[in-house]
Image 1 (cartoon, rainbow, N blue to C red):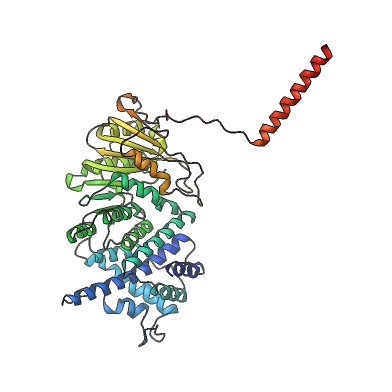
Image 2 (image 1 turned 180 degrees about the vertical axis):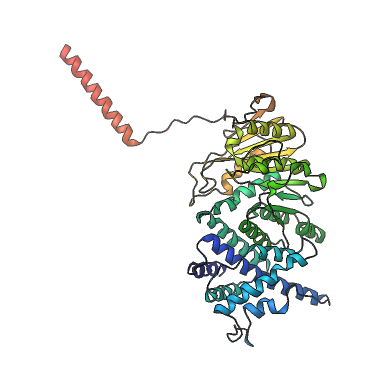
Length: 484
């Protein structure tokens, strides 16, 4: 039912003059979805309070509650068409009353880690793009069909939302940068293996895929106590995101996965001076996929000891600095980082090898990131001791990756298994840090174990070759006969 509802909403938004792409569909679905989620959350909290004899005070004032402005119901539980706003009346209420009311929550909230603050921040970043109040009425009616009350409902909804984020990669306007293949994220989380109590950070959060998967990993890692659940909700996951739409999607994605008030901040991570990062600001785990190919202005570069316009290289410096001693990281970066000869790349590889233990490099095939057109690697490292050995794994698949043939967890299963012991195989090998060039610190090691396969000829080629040999033999025999 949920999947069909999302399709119906996309069809409605496709007809609206204010929505022109999949990105707009996701953005506009998100804010309406968020308000329905909030309504269900308040109902659950009210019920829980009543069961313990307490009184629950609603976050949202009566006039702005879902069942008052969005879907007022009659005595038989159906939409009351006499009370329900539609057309210009609905659009005017949403644009000039509802949004301004919700924006104020950011100013009034006690702290940034409350759901009140998140409400205010979300609606300060958004605007209603749905131009037709009649289309908006249809969208609201469809979303009212959805429920967020049970674990199963939330789980199904989170998967569908992930699918919508994935589809944004085909929508232009750099939509693909918000999406990292989930099988790859799950594998990275599995290898880094965070534990309850770790503070986990993604400074280029996008749609918060790494934080969502880390939450699922920890939530299912053991039977959790009440205090451990509270730690996961409030003191485990932290993110920063520069772009407004990605920030909204990331917040919504985490909420649907079960984190009530995500600690994601809307800010430019790279605007922070590395020299200002103190021990209290550091994290136990970094999981991230910084943007490929971005360029930063000179003013931003001044925040970093290694000056470069390459966004991913600045992020890598940030991640190394913000990790605690002994902290672990899994970071995706373009594979050209391993061998670039510019001074910044050489200095950054030297920093990584000397300040961290770069223990694993996963070399991914082309097509891993649909539409990105770049090859990537994953760097796994621990901050503190310098690198002694680097274990490489080259993911070789017997198929080409693409939109209809994407990476899956099975593709990565051998990597996960061999990485546990850094075992050598046809696809994996180790190099000693002493053998790395101490001038260039080039890390583009070639696989010494890969078998060179001789391509088998097609039957047609073999038959043609046989005919050619027969002809040659016949000519030789004729020549011999003439000599005799």
